[in-house]
Amino acid sequence: MPSHREVITAWILPRLPPLIRSRRADLAPLYRLACGQGPLGAVTAAALAHGLACEDDGARGIAVDALLVHAAHGDLNGGDLGGFLSVLVAADMARLGRAVTALADALAAGAHAQVWDAVARMLTELLPEAGERPRTGTTDLLIVAPTAASLTGVRLWIPRLAAVAQRTGGSAFVKQARRLHALITAGEETA
Image 1 (cartoon, rainbow, N blue to C red):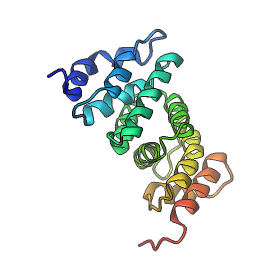
Image 2: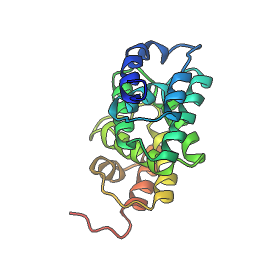
Image 3: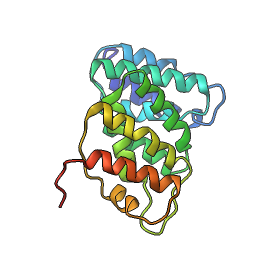
């Protein structure tokens, strides 16, 4: 059992939600688990999402370091991570801007594929529907996304992104959506 990281993380996970808003969160176990061995999965992605959304800069930095270890081992599903970050943001448990800052740090340090997968999932789930206003931090997410997309060379059709890119106006939100949409659909046949 001690070598089963997912089980250990499941034991830690219920203790993480209050730490998101704490200014003195201790997330060292997330890093130690990332450095360990044994299976992991969605529970680990959920725990890491809590860490990446943490308000405490030091704790968030530890979560970024843990993400980098997972990226180096290729053992974490970035889409799951993005899904859990989306849940935390949509439930108003976490601020999108803090999570985006953490993802940008991880991207700059080399976690390209995991960050892109997380960002793509977040865009799919957090971009506003027609007539809705974007939540605070969404433009920042759209600023990080093109770098991640460029580094991974991904081509993808995201329906909500396409809808935002077609909006009229010149807000930073719409401009960034157009930029990303053009980048990830270049050369793609869409239906």
